[in-house]
Length: 354
Ligand code: KG4
Ligand code: ZN
Image (cartoon, rainbow, N blue to C red; front, side, top):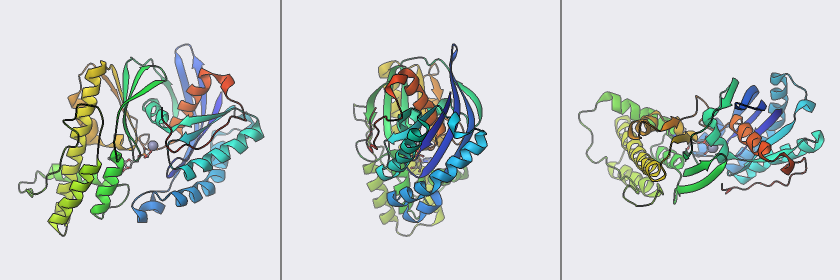
């Protein structure tokens, strides 16, 4: 079955056509075509995503990318069997653009329309590939997902396939947001996580013998009993530190980046480890833009019980994309096909939960 997936929840317009099959050995997918238009350059002057600009860009991109994805997949639009579109969470003006486009297309083609949870997409991104074929193997449950992105920081427990329960989450800022804000404070470009991790790596490599002793940041919520996170205190501490240091040269920026990345990593690792012990987790899935961070990845792999199967997304699949939306949408569709028609009621929900 051919599934068209549409993602417009934030600053990436993504369209994918997957050929999906429910085989005896599991679900198998083939990427027939995948196109993505990133708006990073457009939002960079604002140090974050500007929702109205994102909306305008999605509206402009969608018809162009739709034509391109069909051409690349070498199919006609009447070969599409199902349309999956992100309905949340995300920026509502941005989400609506994809939804309106998908709705009109579903009505025109008379094919089922599947509202898809962006975070469920991030979970399944660990099984995806940018091209070619891939399958979803049998997952050992209980599984846990650490979802870390610009909008979310949450621990999702999965006792069974497609059964989700949030067991920990941020009480304020998301971890990616904290990276982005810290970067902005140091006059570093958006998206902050990428540049902070690059500077931190340089600092780690340099084996600085004279680090500035003022550069110490808190490890938020390390000693709280629950599995929740908080990053706004770290953000404020970073702001005060920067004020105290006065003018920042490249050397100080590298040192702050290192300390910031370590503070974030220790917190994420600690809570994730605690959750795996509490629930006897057999599989850990890490997804979302921040999961591209190599230092965090190493920290998690080092700290967790070696018996746990740890899965990260492949290159280019940590950040937002529509391949993951195609997988999540297909799995929801196949669970109960009769639930979906071309008239499926669907609206943008910025705070969509599991
Ligand atoms: O999942 P995503 O593409 O969009 C949302 O759904 O939010 O995540 C974007 C976030 C940004 O905050 C960005 O700074 C962060 O992911 N990010 C990173 C890295 N690459 C992207 N954070 C830390 N280290 C990275 N290497
Ligand atoms: Zn995302």
